[in-house]
Length: 480
Image 1: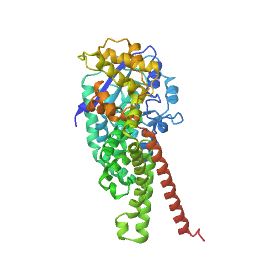
Image 2 (image 1 turned 90 degrees about the vertical axis):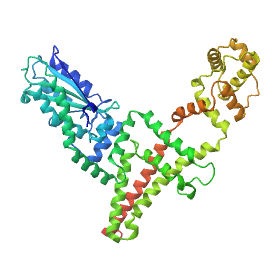
Image 3 (image 1 turned 180 degrees about the vertical axis):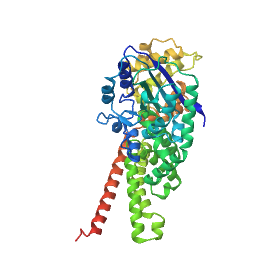
Image 4 (image 1 turned 180 degrees about the horizontal axis):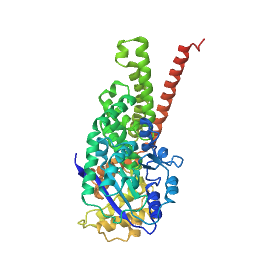
């Protein structure tokens, strides 16, 4: 384990009014757009994972537990009240402790409780190494997840000013990092056990998979790109004909690729907690069947669990395949027209500068005009596209006269004519394909996939809970 995976910075402040300085720090550290407000005092494994991974859940004003001290959750208003009795003069120290995201996950720093536990173990030594009296010091922290690197903001101050110099030995920084490393090594077995406990609760979801998706809450483009990559990979493999149904024999070769997309959707922030709950219900129900019917072959193979999970996967998988069929049903020029319509202003058209004949240039202009019509551009928008093309190509034409001369009612293009026109405008097949792939994720209405997955999952959850209730009622004799 390298200390380079840990970034630690600390600075001192000698404000005119220490209370005001600390209050300003608190206001920044507890900003609801940045800070994790999940409670340390009410720790629950599944609840805690869902809290920090769902923006709408953990960024609420009713649960204002953004800050913690050595005893646990602390409210800003309580700290402000305590500051009233404090001397205005004095020093306070502030800083942050940051981790590379993969490093944090790998070493068990996932929930807010994990970061709290770390600070309660390493901050006392930091305070002593700084030459402060541990009994005369208060410290506070807040966990921020508004960047790719999870980081703790901290503030340290004396209750009664004693230390006259704000300086501390340089060795304090390296000793602190070493203490952090030692803590993570010592707690490795605990985190592994916690990981296994989580896997036992959630069935097939591993803790690392569950946690990786959390950052997508703040980086939705990243989520869309990754989902896009999975979809492109799948769609490039699917056969253009045949029965495109999740459970059809025709799809056996592509089942793993479809499942990857499904699992990625089910691990989205807005879905994964309910998915974990659903898996837990299936697991409980399967255990009940084991107890009722013993060690039968179907129970050994977890038939009920797998059948119910397959029902959910089938529904989501068929949505993904339906989207592919819809895309395939359009002819090539319709698909291109739809795409060009949205992205023509991002295409940097440029034709060869060494073309000598004006006639050749005018023929290219005719093709460009047809593409503009295909994109449903108005006169002003078309003019802008032409101005950009003429400038990029270094062609000397009056733009309005050129457009007037190439305007025609015959604007239909075959797919061959379209791709030939693009090639003359600087987009050969490779460059155009790269451009399309780069922009495909923007076209992807991934929320539709997520919403449909949620609808299917909610239905299956409802059915599963209903069946459990019916079986309990039956067992209790309520059916009489």
